[in-house]
Length: 446
Ligand SMILES: NC(=O)C1=CN([C@@H]2O[C@H](COP(=O)(O)OP(=O)(O)OC[C@H]3O[C@@H](n4cnc5c(N)ncnc54)[C@H](O)[C@@H]3O)[C@@H](O)[C@H]2O)C=CC1
Ligand SMILES: O=C(O)CCC(=O)C(=O)O
Image: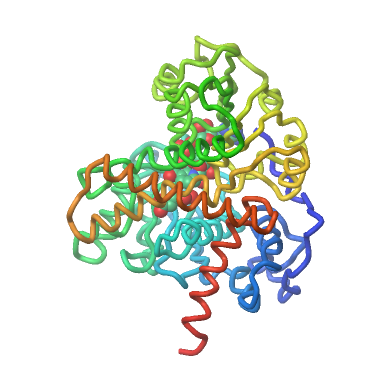
């Protein structure tokens, strides 16, 4: 529950970053002093540029979102008053295919954040080689303060407003923080009404009854678990009895925790927005998941000791899974981490300074852009199934998911060994090369 260290500078900061072209606030992303999630992404691109060979001449492509839409979402609240919410959809790169990436409902969502999240989608989609560019969306709203009726109005109006740029072959949203199958159903229905035909392929992460895919709900957590087990084998860490700490116990953290516990790991600490729970001998993960379903958070879980939120980062564990928001592993928290491995379930949880701190401590970081790619991989399966109207079994889906995750992870591992770079830089090398190769092949002129 820490704040991102927005001015977290790395020794690489500033190199290769574009000169200031504008002082307009909406273009502040061009300013290297303006950090936050987009600035962190720019630093990650700087780290990969020396490894891009002749494709480096296209690197500026990665530093500018192709398209960013800001929309106003006015709705009538249950009490009859009118409220306005700000929404975003950013398409970072479309060189490899239509945009793909989730939609977040959160009170702190900003354009910079959605730009960074869309860019990480470009990298992630290329890293696992699904035929998509990168996109992401968000609405600045605290969903816990609104009724289902009000949230439905927000989701529907947001969909109509971004309807200009989304579509089954243009840009395909999916769930992210505080959005779920129900929100995807509203989005699919609204888009379908607007175009006059049922368009199941416009979003993924839908209910099964509406063209959703088996296994999508668990896919991101399953991917986190799969690469975690692969990496643990490579560093000689047995999963049986391994101590795991998880921040964020929603779709991603909850599923990853369940799979690790089923494989014999001890989930010793879990933190979410309501608090932190701890049990040295391992928490009863099934019971904790049931408690979260009933109460909305881990706080008040009876079969655990309470831990001060700040102590979470220093907990005695082998594997740490940040699965909440950006910037949680930063210059303040990273020095306290005892884990041997950090598996990034969340997008952008680790700042570049923290990456360096963990690297110096010998902590292996499995970066978001590969570790949490399981969700979009099964979203791709869902999209393919919707187009063919032919649906696969859950076993088929999980087997294909596990194969893609293992192959992609092992390829990245080889690149990291070859260039003696972190797994994050290795993943960026693989992914950015694919994106920029597509860019080069498409050429510049209409
Ligand atoms: N849902 C998906 O398929 C994918 C999600 N992700 C990323 O995983 C992360 C989590 O997403 P979901 O599990 O889908 O969201 P979710 O909405 O299901 O769960 C979010 C979790 O984070 C916790 N959280 C929120 N603020 C917190 C804070 N300040 N401190 C501690 N915990 C906090 C919440 O309590 C909740 O447990 C996000 O970074 C998201 O972008 C990445 C890939 C795919
Ligand atoms: O399933 C998808 O299309 C995207 C999921 C997502 O937003 C992510 O991987 O961060």
